[in-house]
Picture 1: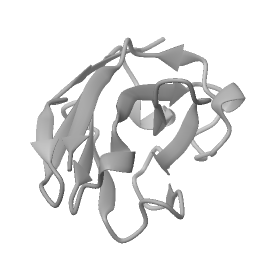
Picture 2: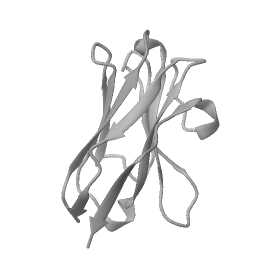
Picture 3: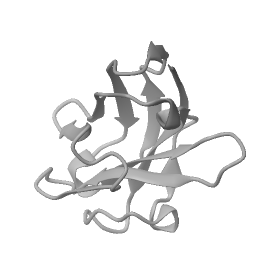
Amino acid sequence: QVQPVESGGDLVQAGGSLRLSCAASGRTFSNYAMAWFRQAPGKEREFVASIRGNGVIKYYAASVKGRFAISRDNAKNTVILQMNSLKPEDTAVYSCAARSVSSAPSCRPSAYNYWGQGTHVTVSS
């Protein structure tokens, strides 16, 4: 079992960058696929990026591909979301999720069974 805890959310101007971190407690962190989702006010939760347990396979939403990068450090039980060229439409609460049943990444929220509380990202125009 892991418990993700996000950090790094902030207010940033359009075109700027932010680095979100997700620290996950628990052993065998490399057995878990990890993902970032986001939810903007009044909108449904949206997939952002996911990464396989060994870090080899990564998936991105079309809206962030080329701007965001997901990575992980299994020795530190940490997942990073590097966000560049931020746009006002990236404003949302960003949540980190862990998938215990498989180390294979997924873009479906239902595939993940451990969630963090989220961190706020606001991009001003």
